[in-house]
Image 1 (cartoon, rainbow, N blue to C red):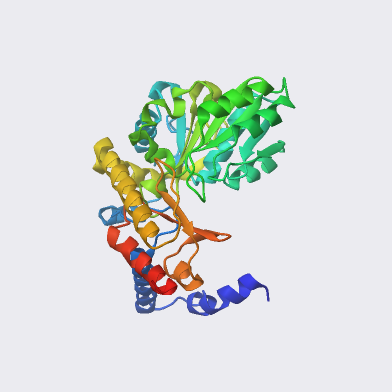
Image 2 (cartoon, rainbow, N blue to C red):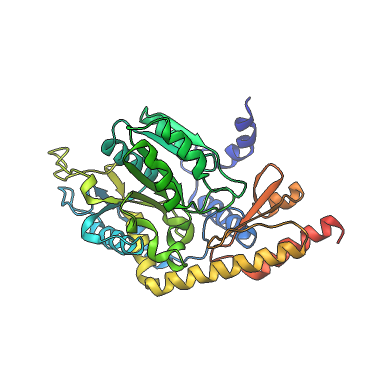
Length: 390
């Protein structure tokens, strides 16, 4: 039996699906127990980028409807049961936050940030068919997956000690590929350190290869950076930025994984892909979760841009508090400006498990999304101090 099988075995007995239906009372008990177990972890969920501060119970009725968004959000389809108007509203609102013009921006709700990255890189590869893809060693591993799926050569360049892409290393790599063009991935809050790549420096460095296409992986930072000093200049403000991926369950918070895939409208050529569907389709998934669109529209409409800004400022204030508290606990914290990720010395494994901390080598991190309160940080720091005998 492999490790995965051994780990899963205790749960398989409890949740095994048999030949006969379970009694409804037993189903209810199991479901309630599962929900209670998940909710019990919420006050200690500090290390992974998912905002737990959301409430969608008013939308329970949507769970009895199949909502499928087929093809492009703006295209009618023959099925006709969709949430495309809501999807379009979400795309337009976030496009504005990314300094895009809604009429000049194509976008849809993808199943994940990885799909949104694949979509953006695919647009870059179509635009620059001879170019290699360049990313830093701190980029999300989905970039490697995307390059492999597209059979496009990936060049991984060094990141500096804080996790930002090293422009000098990128320039050296691009000079070796002069004339081919460059598809450069810039990360807006890297996975481990929360680093925000310098897009201006990346563009300048990549020009040694020729024409430059930049894809922004803004999975975590996309709903935070618009409300920082970088707001006016990030995203589509730079003409070289062709596409952006933003994971919506991270900073916004939803009970399902979902992301926005955005690109400049001129990078897509929509056409009817199947007569039986009757919709144009430039998406990767074709059929997409209409439920996700409803959830995102509901959350964004309920907050408005003012609410998003309040959430971002709350998260950044909590990050500053956590940085100070972790410093007082003697953990050598590090945080990038405009980031909600705080990296610090890795505590005992029991603490890492209890607080769901992401770790890499001798360092760990917390991410202060809106559900993170000062009391949660205080509890973590107290346990670290006790472990250290302080």
